[in-house]
Length: 183
Length: 280
Image (cartoon, rainbow over all chains, first blue to last red; front, side, top):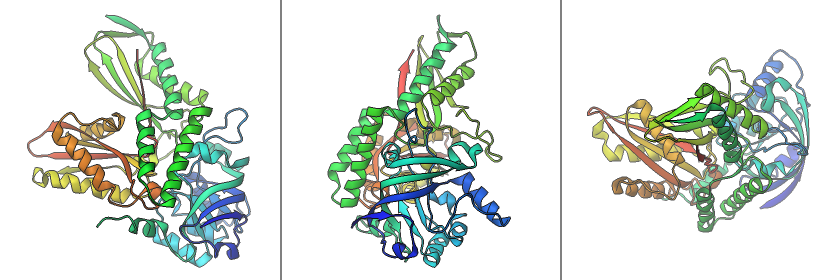
């Protein structure tokens, strides 16, 4: 099924998304990967606020290339999500609901997704030049010293994604493969 | 004796960093297009269409194919009758990487310490592999290596009794464990023999060989074909969403080894299997 989705990702909206759905996402998302997540979770531990409002937020696991003159952003495809598994349940516990990345997630993350109505979207790994075209605005909001790993606020239009794991815990990686596995 | 200036090496390395990151080799493009034609599922076809569109955008607009512009792996074949003048070879290569990654707006993805981290800010140092060969030329191959796939690679020191079946099982196990993480459809480099370190190097070199080429030894050429078929029966498919194309290619390189051992290394690469060569 193909759908056009307008962010923010409310609980109500999240519950209508199912593993295997092709979606085109429009709205504001935030970028963060390894070092940014570590810093955000440390800030939460100290009782500090995050650099953005996490309520119903969607986080894109990406470290873009530098923008060439005239570009909004450089190539910007997803990084492997599994490295953020240690932080994802904490992020969901403060309200972040959507995750965009690629690759497998741990059962702990899927449990947190069921608990907090989270959705895990897959962007095409290695399609950085194509995905950059959907990013219409890019603003650096925190952790500038982390370079490619700094926190950025993006406005995306019709970003092509696939729902990999939905908030009921259904997983396209398992279901999609099953149909083609020759035992 | 032929003299080659270190500054010339810097210029070539800088150019190769940019070109390798923006333009996918033709053999890789062909392999991806062939895979697109054999898929029957809507999701798999859609993914491969977007992957094709992506490398076409990168080609036309001269932008990086993928945001992980990799660690610069530099393979040098230096003719023994060459004298490198005007500077230090390693520094000349790193200067090229620094220049290429800066001028090409490529991502700086290298940290200065594996445990304590800290970005070096210029993507140096390069990983340099040097071979001395006959002649008076320098052949430079630059393969920017992304780590989504590098992280899914594996090495195992087999007992010789494990035999061919042990290697076959290890290849399948490694690809299956990698699953959706290395951005399938992937490219698989296999190194068998040598020592612990040489097996890993062979696996990386296997990734630099054209996808449409075969091992010169028919025994291993057949093994390449057989293992690619078996991998594509796993059903992982493009991006792991299910499909017939889990790998676009598999290359095997071998070396003699010790009577007591059979090292086997598997280096995984994604569909963005980049490399570019220039001879000075």
